[in-house]
Length: 351
Ligand code: FNR
Image (tube, rainbow, N blue to C red):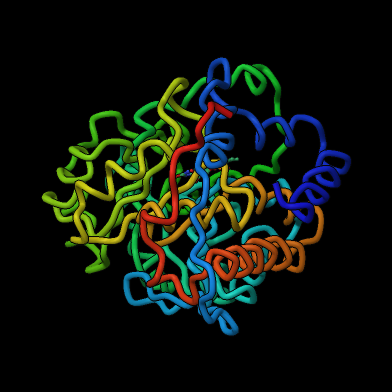
């Protein structure tokens, strides 16, 4: 993990109430996937090319039409207000200032209109809820607020059980909880039930969301090549290789080990993004060399937000970006386009 991110993590651990820290940090089950996901990136070794002109390194890229200074995204995560009073607005500002793209969660703790007003390029993450009308109204608001794509999370038919979180109550003011859904619930008493993810959601949701908004739909939570093909055949504009940061199915394969299979199955038809345990530019470099078009960073952004608000988020993403540029140069590549699988090889011995 980069030193800057380590410092922010330590500071957040000191300052956040213990239940909030545990909620953010936790993984599902025995946390096998959580533990393996970060380690898996360092199970690759790099094969640099010597004597290349790397006096200028270009990290710029375009994702579904959004020009970015670096291929870095903030993963969708619930309830930023637990980390900082400015909540997702601070994350959005920090991300914009670092030249990245923010994915805003359905479970955001600030209205999508208020996030859209300060964000750079952003996408909206969708949980399809039992009440389809609530989902429809919400994604329409996100689109009207400037979201440029939808990210349909496909790995959460039920919320993963996190031992450390079970039984611990997090104090959250009523008006922060599900702030984006609340206005669509009316006077229903079963609000939480209506807003629960619908476990019957299938690939048909891709086309439904696309028609509803006209926005491209990216499916998040893909760990197999055949599943990626199914998503594209169903109309998806991209996929995110992800095990939800180890918070859903414990013993799910680390993203680093699933990525190449997905990239091969997609075969250039659409961008393949990836998340889970990315903690440095070196991790991102491995992902990009394996064929990812961009990398999402999760928990480190929450630690940065807790520690330093928008400035903290900007500093965290800038640190990953600068580390990526440095690593790219030392690999003898002056741009992302020069990266390919020839730059990586599995480590000789298990790490
Ligand atoms: C998440 N994640 C997530 N994913 C999603 O699609 N919708 C969501 O609302 C959330 N909420 C959420 C809350 C918290 C506290 C965490 C830590 C994660 C998963 C997230 O988008 C991403 O897949 C992982 O966090 C990436 O792994 P790292 O970088 O945290 O290891």
